[in-house]
Image (tube, rainbow, N blue to C red; front, side):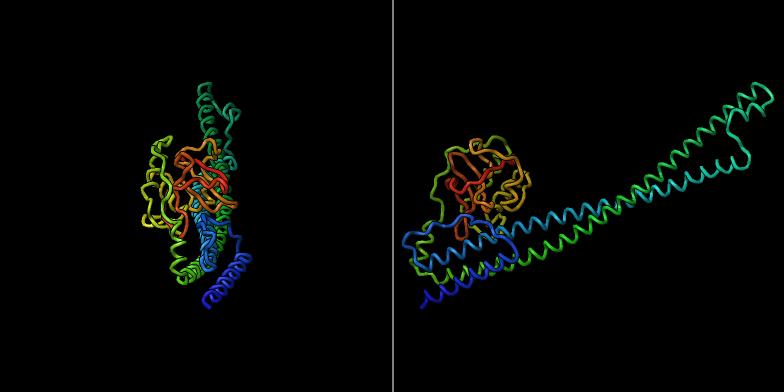
Length: 349
């Protein structure tokens, strides 16, 4: 009776998640599933299926967080650009008004009979010296007139350009604001779905027999010895490696980024933050940043990624091994690199 009840709950839970995933988003492949013994009971298999689904949803939730953060950065940049452009336009309008008055004076002088040319000076001068003095004065006035006209034209252009820039920044700000609102709603929806899935997995776990719990926990904990000497190629990478290794034994927790617990990308981002290097939060975003490296180029400190699309990350430590936060119920530990699921690597230091 208990097995039948769990089967119905698992079937309904998985169906609900599939519907949500189809409507709202596309979930990535599993992170690092716990190996299930050949003789695992049906209840244990069902629990692992629910848990893996939660791990997939956790990665999508983190990607939504990244998207929201990016939209907010774009919004702040657009708002800043708009404020700068408006200040520039205001200053340009002041210059335009000031130089416009000077240009108007020259125009008024010309209109009332003042002629700024050497022919006028020759006709009105009484001596050569007088002519030279008048010509010099006229040249000075003409230069000032040209300078005023040039500055007036520049101020007009600056005011026009600044106005256009402010309008463009305003459009970008509105677009970013709309995107941020969309990503926020998406994030909240994913959070609800993730929590529902975590609750269902926990309910399934609570119904496991003592034998099932023992079989599940047998795969947890560190069972692989780290390399005897881990030497990264540079000081920052070394700091990141040392930071990650220092967290061994800390529990995995969905969405956690330390220092008490971690998910896979939470561990790698926390470790590099200790080295003074900021990297993206989700494993998928981490896999598209930094510098790509091939498998033969791997050095301690490089991040190694798994599955397509990427949904799990670890930190390479040499000798074909990595340190990572594997899955719910497990702890940060050293493990062999999962070459069968390997999808690439990135270097951040």
